Amino acid sequence: MPDASSAAPQRPMAVTLQVVSIVLFTFIGYLNIGIPLAVLPGYVHTDLGFGAVAAGLVISVQYLATLLSRPFAGRFIDTRGPKKAVIIGLFGCGLSGVFMLLADWLDAWPMISLISLFVGRLVLGSAESLVGSGSIGWGIASYGALAIGAPVGVLLVNALGLWSMGVSIMLLAALGISLAWKKTPAPLVHGERLPFLHVLGRVLPHGTGLALGSIGFGTIATFITLYYASHTWPNAVLCLSLFGACFIGARLLFGNLINRIGGFRVAIACLSVETLGLLLLWLAPNPNLALAGAALTGFGFSLVFPALGVEAVNLVPPASRGAAVGAYSLFIDLSLGITGPVAGAVAAGFGFASIFLFAALASLSGLGLSVYLYKHAKRTRDKPVAS
Image (cartoon, rainbow, N blue to C red):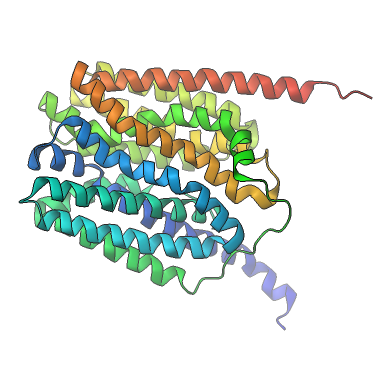
């Protein structure tokens, strides 16, 4: 048995390496999501010849699949463990790459190619719920790969064609599986497990705030390339990259504020910044101000998920935390799933700039809801206990 005094100094480093290695799985999962973001809407709209609604739907259908699979993912994580969830999810990511390859090979038949894309997105969305929620349960999560994935996808397609994205996703999934296979699983938490609908009811208000705040991300992720094209501006992919970079920067710089001042206060500040960024995107007369709007939006959106999530997950017993993460995350999936087709319809009727006003109004509504939840929680906390 090793000497305790010699083993103790190594523990912080061992914990750090464990967390970093688990974050890598989330990074791989979101890289698989980020790679097609800047490419697929334009491919569907321009190469395959479908309208703005179809271009939005091909992105949003992934989030709808994630939404529908969240309850299963939460139960699976609580009963089978996050490691198994991550491995199965990574297999699904690889399978989605196969369908992307098929879409490229079948582009002479636009409808069949589009169907293949839809199937691949459905598979990727279901896989994301397992990888994302599993990684949160196993360690921590990050959207950071979106900043890298978008330009990587554009570079791959420009250099090699659409098939290269499918191959890249398959290779990334294989890398993730090989890394996850031998890792030590997290121990299961035993105790009271609430029914999923009960958990969903408890996190509903916080999840609604998250859903309203996520619409800005959905509009940028789905339509920024078509928005830039409508203005004949170059380098639309920079908006996605800058959004992701500011998202990462804000999490690194201010992530500890949630523990220091509380989730509601952080959410209120973040949604205020996000609303300003979306209004700037709506009014931007040139690409430089559009970049500034994307940066503000990414900075603001960065801590909305964990800030409201901390307040939501604390409402359930520890043994149901996996289900709570799944139920709470369900709202971002619902938001992103609806945003594509709805914003596509708004763009078709009022132009692409109008979708950012739509997103700003949603973010403002989320801000108002967060203020209400904060005041309600404060009144409840300060209410004297009857003797």
